[in-house]
Length: 259
Image (cartoon, rainbow, N blue to C red; front, side, top):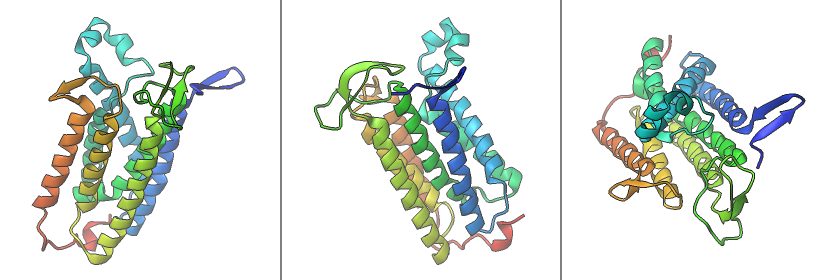
């Protein structure tokens, strides 16, 4: 594992570098998606703001997951390099995107459709940062041939465990490809906006729920981890929005998608 890259006197955390790489890749993908929807907006600014909001949300959500530890020493709990909750990041980024959609005068569901493939890619690359740093996001012990140990990780283990960040990288990149393809098809067929975002909520929710089955996270709600509970909420929200979309709804007029 490579928690830090040493370049002369500098020590750069591999997790932070991969998060930055993920945001950069997401910006290029979002720019391409906005272009094919004839939406004029600065994807790099959008991803920068949403990414920062997601990091803040992930940190705060993690702090609130352990309130006793947080209130005992809030400063050190917030300003550590480690401990980011996926669902908190989603909520923070989602709120920022809604505000940005309103600011850019873009219909919210159209905007969220465009952001969905980029969000999946950004998350996938960020998980490589978790893998390189060995921050404890790996799974339960396994005897499978691809099991790995993380003796030099931030959260070390000498047992061979499931490299779940690599699983997530592969699955989320596949989800990004599926979202991109169905986005192209829905645009061609003139489907109502919001369906790509619904697919994002459902597919990522299912994927995260399944990954949690082989993780060591503590169980809280009905035998589920916090991440699994959030995944169920994501799936339900996706289904509700999908069902609420009228099958005969007209596509968003072109002139409402541009500024």
